[in-house]
Length: 371
Image 1 (cartoon, rainbow, N blue to C red):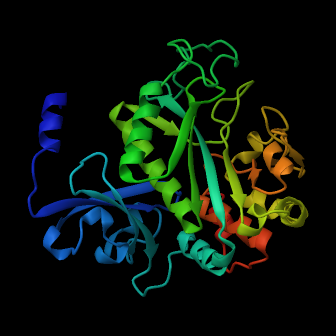
Image 2: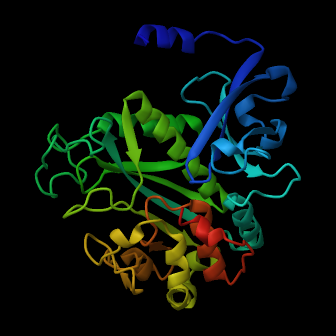
Image 3: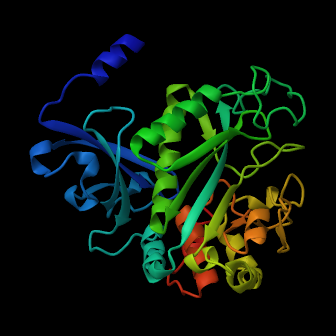
């Protein structure tokens, strides 16, 4: 389709109707979506400002997404967050949903449901998050990162991190388009940058409160996949997609509670929390992303997966406490263990549960993080 025709179709007025793209997670924790036509007259405010409850529930064939058997394949999707649609513009929206069985019970892959329970219990503590999503942009032709020549390797790591120039910044147009699309959608994207390896980028989501972080990161991932699709490029969230002396991809998660951000919070709350995290290191690692052992080696700005280490300003630690936090005596810390393919609902839930002594009741939820 020509660019001119694409723009013409995008700008066609729909008058009393709009398009809603429903987005949910499949059994492998990848976003899926399908669209439906809705009527503006059924909404009391513009669609993108309407609450999720204003949108009708829907369903899909779970046997085609690894979430149901063919003889009982219907999975219900319930809207939980609404965003402006950067691909269609106008009144059109993206609708994030979570999944349920027809009897109303949450689907086993619905990690949002369990995360929401913990976030509600921690509401008075005001848990804040900021997630740094690293990813690789891969060529369709050979499934290797942009900047990797066919059958060979680029120059070693060094010039690529925050670099500029055709020999360094591979895929900038995709990263920039994604950033702008997310801002249009209404997501809190605080910035982007080129990462350490060729074809590797990062965007930051936050600060967000509670369940908003998981919702925002999943929608930002979906938008990234759609943007890259338009450039005929794949998005790779594996922890170590390129073997050898190349950085892996993480999803560093910055976290704080209201008491941590208040005067004295560093010594009174942040330092004691390190011991809690150490005690539950294995439990967190199980849920922090499949294949993370290939990334957490003690090299390439990581700590070993087998040990827990925290330190001030140390990017080789499991948890980094910022120099400014130590200086101010209050602030936040960065959990550097989560892999790029982690489920943010699980990771944020575990951080709140462990640090704030709030139990979670989610049979199999940790295993879901290992999909």
